[in-house]
Length: 505
Image (tube, rainbow, N blue to C red; front, side, top):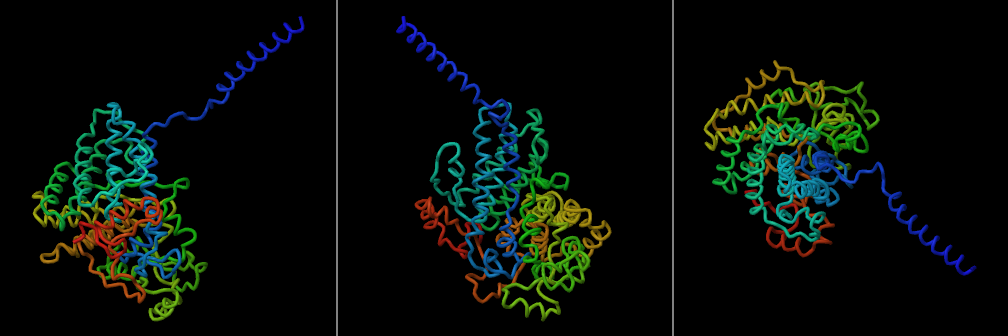
């Protein structure tokens, strides 16, 4: 009897334990945690992460002599024309680890889902933008296999040549833009355009136009056909269609976050940029700049001594470090180097400042060049030129109401600075340089592509090159993906600042 009782208790205990184990699985399932994410929210994350990192202040904007710092260490870069892989790697890591990983994930999820065809093509366009930034900055990059580690476990991607990448980008943009359909699902949660298909089409065709113009010196026939197709598709011509990320306290602008914290007193407007704006009485200088008159330190850069007046602005000369910039400031009649002009971090580069990727100003100016070259036959180069300038001046109000350019000042400037015969390419591309302010990768790319503005060689005595032509590959990529990096270097040239990317002729 005792044995029967013990056996019964054992069986009961076993059944009870198994029952508890089954219920334990259910108990450990979250009743509130998401088990899947709508891919439109992944697109939003990719868009937000497309905002240009703070490293573009150190290299790209410094290379084109718009913004500069005399400080070394983490800020070593274009002012010294020296390599600093802690900074040159940031674009690579930001775009591959975030933007391209996410867009490839969206494409993987939506390729076989006709109901999300619009989302698929939106992701293709945003991804093309990221790849264009990367190849323009570094040259040969992983394109076909790039970003596939997350979905297909390709952890050591092969590199594609830039010459092979550009036709693929153009095809991708052409197909994705054409495939967007007003009859498809409207992705209302999209942070860029609220799912507006017409605006996404303009984004795609504007990038296609940009890609075509990038090839103007490398493959003129492909450039011309691409530009014509993009123009016929319908690029952005109005500020209402600009592509930009809106930032706020939760998702701050990376440039603004840097310029309103550790580097607030360390980064200045470069003399060549200020001088060009002053020389033509450009009203944008007052919209962009502030000078803390008489400042002798960071803490003395206060609003009370700040001046927005264009005549008060003094750009910091290129090629100085902490040992020589004090003498330069004294020669300019300043109290210290803290007295040089800065981009106003309370307006243009606040933490909530928008980050613009593609704008009507840029597109109109590219069309001005395309019309001058005879690649399109509609409109006049002069009209596209003036429309581009007007669009950029009007765009400044989006940063802050205090940065708005008055319509009379805008119109007076345009009337005083028409497109003139014999200097068209220089005028157009100098304006593109101004219109791309704070979009460092694009300003850097078009400067190399066009050769304008004509800038003097950086005078820093310890420089590695006269002008930086590309960013160097990250040390992390070199150490992990060594074989493929070395193959790219063997094809493209040395992994240094002097090597030119393929389209840079």
